[in-house]
Image 1 (cartoon, rainbow, N blue to C red):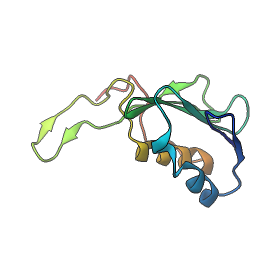
Image 2 (image 1 turned 90 degrees about the vertical axis):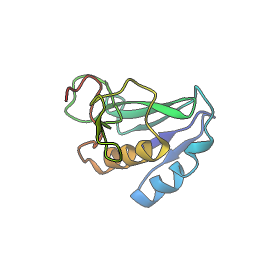
Image 3 (image 1 turned 60 degrees about the horizontal axis):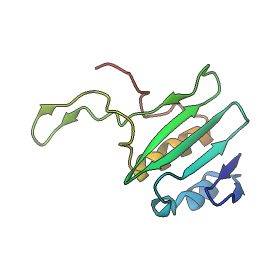
Image 4 (image 1 turned 60 degrees about the vertical axis):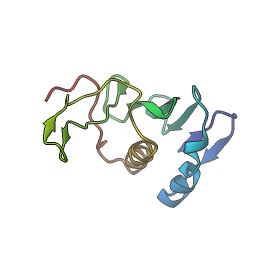
Length: 119
């Protein structure tokens, strides 16, 4: 797979270790910039910086359409308060972006739900 950075740099990714290393610096990507991991032109995952967070869309194998991912956070265990199951875009942390990029690379199901999922 190939990982595309905002500065037009392209890195050939051949292992999980290589991907982790390449993603180690995503916290330095400026607002509005995009990184994208492509398996093929049709099967990709892309993340756009939205201030301190990310908007992540993916189209893994078997998906007909590109889907926006959400945080999936819905319960605050410290206060035992329910939160909405899905939260609008722009709320994924650097760590969650790294995790779903690794899952996509490994061909796993993505751990983050898609936008519009109900609780």
